[in-house]
Every structure is written in structure tokens, then in C-alpha cells.
Amino acid sequence: MYELCQVGANSYYIDCPAKMGLYRFSDTEVYLIDSGNDKEAGKKVKKILDANGWTLRAIVNTHSNADHTGGNRYLQQQTGCAVYAAGIEAAFIADPILEPAFLYGGYPCADLRHKFLMAQSCDVRPVTDPGFPGELEVIPLPGHFFHQIGLRTPDDVVYLADCLCSEETLAKYQLTFLYDIARQIETLEKVGKLEARCFVPAHAPAGPSVRELAELNRRKIGEMIELIHSLCWGGETFEELLRLLFTQLGLRMNFEQYVLVGSTVRSYLSYLRDTGRIEPSFQDNRLVWQAVEG
Image (tube, rainbow, N blue to C red):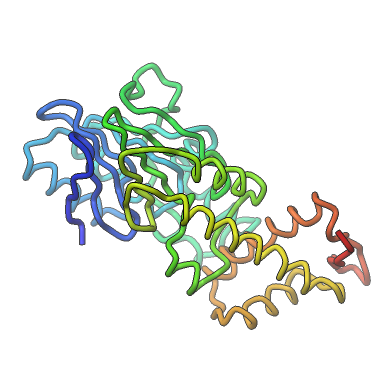
């Protein structure tokens, strides 16, 4: 774990639960793509940098989820590096309470205010800032989160953030976290057509092609759309629908799963509503989702 793997002349990734990218733009200077899930991850990155005689000039966060930004503050304090992110992601990184607040839909209780959902804040700049590393090509990858991006390096390695889940993860959990279903489908179609020397997804194996994995992810979304639609034929409240899904998929409820899966299910309901396949109604002061033909 935390092994440095070279995948291009100057491109690397650090093998860890959410793979970090690293691009060496001179003999002694590097950019980091994401920073791991906490201070300890940051310390392991710093150890790799020191062992290779590298200076960290910037961190580019693909998105603001805590498992990708948790090492930001430590590394920024240790190295003085800049941190960059796109759009709303920068706001979440600067004020991390936004992630659990968004997921919960209100002020998050103490059960949700921890490093798994809330990284430490740091100074962050937008990717449109003049100081952004010009060597890196920004690839918009919305869907998993608001303004998630991927990055292509000059030696043709593409870092894909969280737009893909591994085959094993899809088989185990099936309902993986998504913010915008329609945009995620578009992103998967785009990613499936990309060409590169090597692709590095954060949560799937690195390799020369992700076409089959992108299609597998797209099919799984299609299956979840149909499953949620089918569970609404009798008319269900959100809470009952969530219970039915957890039971059918063999998931175990806890606070983190409630907000992560719950947020995702709400996104699927929005997609089904926007495509005309379910209708909301209010019955006895309850919001009920009713499937319709479509």
C-alpha cells in the first residue's frame, strides 16, 4: 500500500484506497493529483517525495470528497504548495462542513462530522487561476460529484478520479454514490471513447483501456434505474424505498450509509422524475413516489 507506480515517462500513481496521481514536470518538482483520506496519507506522500528528492509545487484535487482531499492541509503546511479544484469543489474543500451538510440535507450531527466525510480545510484556488499547472489538461467528468474533473498529462496518462467503479465494487455494493445520474451517464459515454497511453481510475485498476469498465458501470446504472422504478409501482415514501433497497441489495444500514446511499437514491428519484417515469404526490403529509409507464 502507498507504493509509487510509474505509468508514463513522468507520470505515476500512488497505490492506495483512492489512488493519487503524481506528475514530475522537472527533475525535482512534481504535481500531486488528490491527496488521500487524511493527515496520515499526507505523511506517506511526504515520505515518497523526500525519498525521491522531489518538491511538491501543487495539488490538483479531482473533486472534494474527503478521501481525495484529506491530506491537503498537512501537505500544504509542510510544503507551501498550492491547491487547485474546479467550481463548487473548491468551495467544499475550503469549507469541508459542506460535504456532510449536503449529504444529510441539514446541519450534520456529530455522527457525520468526522474525517470520512469531512476533511480539514485548506487554502484552495480555482483551476482557472493563472497559476494552475498548464501542463495538465482538465477533463470535465461530472456525475459522481458536482464539478469532478480528470486530468491528462503530457505523456498521455489520464487520471479519471471517481467516474468508474471496479467490477468487484459494483458486484458487492451495486448502488454506488452518484450525485447526477444523467451527467454520470454522459461522462461514462465520453470516457468509454477516450484514448490514452494509460488510464488511472481512483477506485479501479490502472490500464490502457477502460472501455469495457465504462460500459459495465453504465449498465449497472441502468439496472438501478429499473430497480428503483419497479419498487415505486405501489407508491413509496423515500424512507420505505430506502429500506426496500437496502434489504434487496443486502446492504447494512448505518449513519454513513444512510446519507451516502440516501443521497444517491434521491438522485435516482430526480432522474426518474425528470424523465417522466415517476410522479410525486403528497398523502397524509407524506411525499410518495409513484411509478408510471415510460
